[in-house]
Image (tube, rainbow, N blue to C red; front, side, top):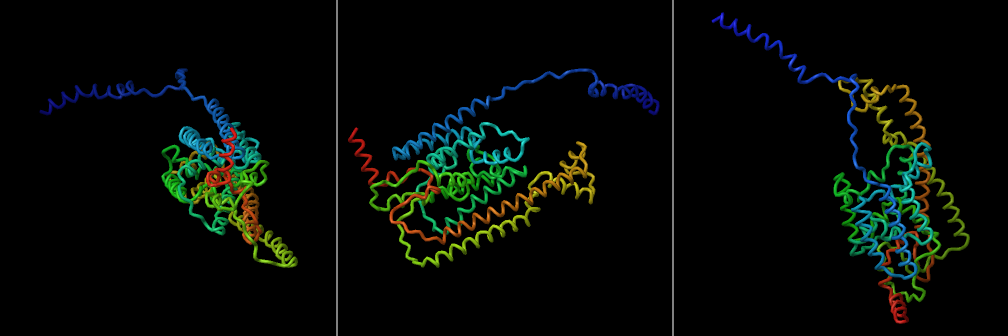
Amino acid sequence: MNGTKKRMISLLLPALSALPAVAQNRFPKPDFESGYQYPAFTYAVPDETWWNTVDIILLVAMMSVVALAVIRQRKRRPVFIVSIISVLYFGFFRNGCVCSIGAIQNVILSLTDSSYVMPLAAFLMFILPVIFTFLFGRIFCAGVCPFGALQELVNIKNFRLSKAVSAVLGVIPWIYLLFAVLYAVTRSSFIICRFDPFIGIFRMGGDIGMIAFGGLLLIASVFTGRPFCRFLCPYGALLSLFSRYSIRRISITPSCINCDLCHNACPVAAIRPPYENRVKESRMEGVKRLLAYFVFLPVMMFAGAYMMRTASDALSTANRDIRLYEQVVRNEINPRDIQPVDVEVFFSQGGTIDELESRVAKIGAGFKTYSTATGALIGLVVAITLINLSLKRTRKTYGIDHAACVACGRCFGYCPQNIKHKHADENCR
């Protein structure tokens, strides 16, 4: 039996010794010096330039239609049609990008960083609505913006918020805008794009939290006019400045009979009813109150600047280099066998701690400067809001708050005088 085993082993040994050679032939080591060139694969990339051109042409055409409808014809139907087109094309077909709201960050970054070249399409998407707003009011918000159009189409009932609540919530878009500028200037994050509540709905996928938030905003839009546009949109806050001084404006019907129908129909509370200021004060009391405002305003600015400067270190953690430095420091204090991916990539690319420290110090100094300026501006916005709430102006007729008006045209269909003039014009034809 032992002799049989020996003969079998002697027969198997040559075969076993040949296995490494077979394995080596089946899975040869890669040869990087043979001069072999991998074939080049080409993929058909969509011509985005052509689509950007279509976007710009359609943007201008739709804003022109809305301007003609609300300024000259005083009709809502064209605005409604434009809203449907905007939701379908700019929203679902183009996935809500490039949008004018997010382009704010591209503009700020291009103005502060010479190494960043802003795409022409993004610049035009930003500047064209601003120009049209300065000429005709917030017609972009009327139905050309897919975010505003989506909220407009689902709106059925308008429950009014008090003036004080609306004013306080109206500060949020300005704070949002200032933080977006802060993070864009410091090359930390494009927070407008990151926290876009409707982009997930238009793309039918994405962050579940933001999709849920967008769904809640749409539900709120059913019962109150445009909550995102009024209380969140940073681009709307910017356009409100230009709309306040627009050349051509939507106006109350000249032969207004004070029926209050337009005031009740406005979904964004932009039509102010007549108001009699019953608080009579002497000239000296008015001067004292005005001087108190001038003292209050710089105090609020200083307080905002101080708070934001104090919080600058915490805010700077949004920057990628700051987070990387913290990871590197933790790894140096407590080395681990498996390093974080970012740390491993940093050292594999020849990065040094001294170089990273220098970069982080520069970023931190920039954050302190920009955070201080941001805080001062936030204080200014809050102070102006509080001052406006305390002012009592006498109005003898209905008036439009052009900064708040989104040119939706809902009031046209409720105004009996506008309907009367419309029928008269049709009979003349």
